[in-house]
Amino acid sequence: MPPSPRLPVSTTLPLDTPRLRLRPLTLADAPAIQRRFPRWDIVAFLNARVPWPYPENGAETYIRDIALPAMAERREWHWTLRFKDGAEGDRTDVLGVISLMRTEGDNRGFWLHPDWWGQGLMTEACAAVTAFWFEVLDQPVLRAPKAVGNIRSGRLSERTGMTLVGREDRPYVSGTHLSDIWELTRAQWRAQTSPSS
Ligand SMILES: CC(C)(COP(=O)(O)OP(=O)(O)OC[C@H]1O[C@@H](n2cnc3c(N)ncnc32)[C@H](O)[C@@H]1OP(=O)(O)O)[C@@H](O)C(=O)NCCC(=O)NCCS
Image (cartoon, rainbow, N blue to C red):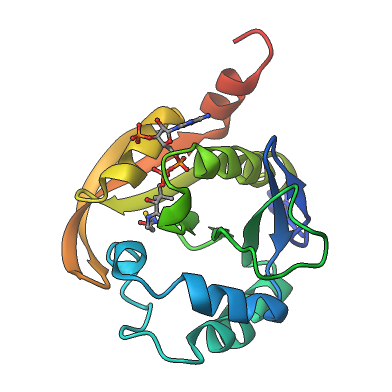
């Protein structure tokens, strides 16, 4: 009999990057996310499952009913982004969220408030959670679909060594759009991050 596949069991662990502290998402983050998230320039190219217009209790409902159960079942891993030098215990300074999902073909998602675009912060957060995906969760490949018109997100994929492996239509908050399917294998990631590379 073939050996049974190794099941990743890790909970969402806190991660540090040079500038950021990534904390596991909790229900206490709901008010901060509710303040930051509902903007057209954030949601336009997010999955059509995001309700729009965004309800007043949208963040709380999403965290309580969708994200936390998926985290408990080790199907999804969600982190808030904060500056490391933010006051400890201050939950109002959420810059964005980054997530890993075991969903086939859709393994990583993120958003950052536009006040902090253009500083490389999400690239930094991606490096930390991508390491978590490959080295802690022991996954062989990471795939992420992105609307072709989502220029910033596409540039992030290019910058982080992802490969374009396909194109298909996918549903977003702003409608159905042609989407690039980006991929990074563990071997590619290790080659990029090894000290000799
Ligand atoms: C996708 C998204 C997170 C990208 O934001 P971003 O600010 O472009 O990404 P980063 O934080 O990694 O910053 C990269 C930018 O900072 C610049 N930069 C500055 N300092 C940098 C550094 N130290 N390292 C890397 N990049 C740096 C880069 O040149 C790049 O700018 P450019 O694309 O104009 O060249 C943001 O646009 C967003 O939240 N969009 C809405 C939600 C969304 O679409 N999510 C993705 C769904 S697929």
